[in-house]
Amino acid sequence: MSGVNALVVATPYFVLILLSAAASIGCGREQAIPKDVAATAELSFADQLTAVRNGAAVQIQVEAEPLSDSDLQQLAGTEGLRTLQVDHSASRITAAGIQPLAALPNLDHLRLRGPGIDDAALAEIARLPALRILNVPRGEFTDDGLRLLKELPQLEQLRFSSSRVTDVGMRALTEFPALKRLHLMGVPITGAGLAEIAKIERLESLYIDDIELSDEAWAALFKARPKLHVHIDQQHHDRDPHRHAH
Image 1 (spheres, rainbow, N blue to C red):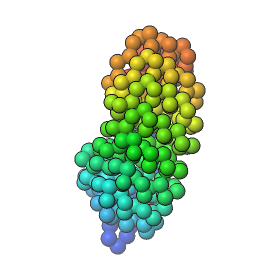
Image 2 (image 1 turned 60 degrees about the vertical axis):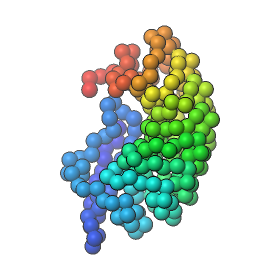
Image 3 (image 1 turned 90 degrees about the vertical axis):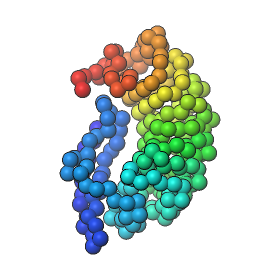
């Protein structure tokens, strides 16, 4: 996983720390932020938005305050924005909030930790031209909504949960043109769905949390994809060829 680079930018109003990271699904958790960066108080959404508009930042990450559709609608015209991470669990974002993001040509990393991401919301996400990384851990979408994401030519990393996605949705994933890293949480798939995932030839890593699958299903996966990096509930699978101590 690539490291995190920090750049401090001073303005008359505040000190802004810019983070640049190539986020990826790796062993354990995402790359830790250096202690001196992590200890810095989070700027408000308004201040971060101002920094992006002024060209002083390319990332907005908000955990301390809940955001809504009306907040995201203020992002219209922030063409320099590359990363948007809405991390407050009470931030309910729907299609109305995502719609303005389609006009942002450089947005390549989107994380929405709150509820509200249904089929209509995924339809708007599917219009983000540069999206590479999508993380929606409290999804409410169906197989039909998931299928819409195949329109994203550069989507290489997908992490999601939705109790409404089935083995049919896993079949849709085989149509994604660039998918390399997949993380499923509590998605009610069976061995048939895992067999569909095995067909994604470019897939490099698969993370599975809170999903019960048989030993036979896993054996079939590793027979088809012996070099695939696999985690189950935050631990390497016994057959993972990349297994190592954490």
